[in-house]
Length: 347
Image (cartoon, rainbow, N blue to C red; front, side, top):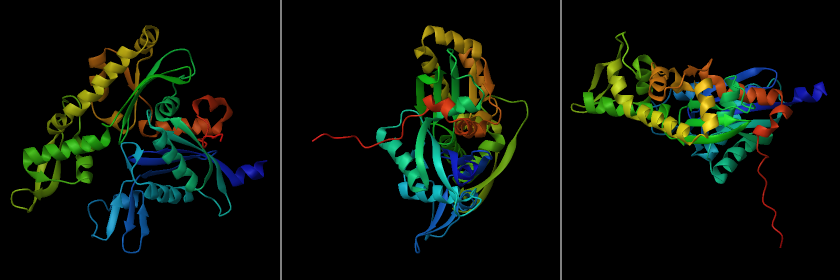
């Protein structure tokens, strides 16, 4: 039996808009790479995947196309998603004959049947024998150490790259949920727009992300943070450098953060009264990259009156939750839908 377990492995796949993580049973997280691929349009050859491809963003000649095949948590380029996933799945393989028996794939809430089938097919075509789907908030809550099978509510807010998933989870299921297309990518766009309007400077997405991580904040902070950002002057067309401070980033991000907070309000308002009482006791758990934004946990706690905590290692919560499912498949079977099958038609 051990021989077959060594050859046929079970994995968890967090196929995110910003980053893709792969959990291998018995090994832990073995892949953590940006969801980016670079392709040579002349030869139709994949040049790079992951971190190597991300470094090419905004820096390539016309015949090299750097793409992010997932947008807002949904596959926008099926073939590139399949190729990227195939490359990532090769990395943890110890030998050429081993293969993946079962894959547990995290997906956002509220996907259509077509979008769910697209995600499943991408994993199947990349080399997985059987694919099970788990909703990201449930996996994130499991990875954050929340008792999701208990008859009490846990409110999870997962701010990823493409979507923000807000969900009240009790007894292994989602009671109330919202999925917003406002997350890390939108924050980058907000900063790019602010710099263009305020400084008349055009910058790319990597520079905006660098500024967000370096000086981004949701509330005023005592420490004065400033970072130099470089781009193209929109008046002269020449390169120029400006200093961006934390109060600039706060102004840029304010509207998007307000939308997330309002959605958390709406989810709490729709939660049944008994479970709403549990939320007050258990608090709100933040995970995903957006949880690391300075001051956001404090701002959310102030606006909702509910205690807010940031999960340990929030960037890997979903992958660690999938890892628990993979390590003890039968104990977490209720979290997974059956693999999609064609509908039987009686003629």
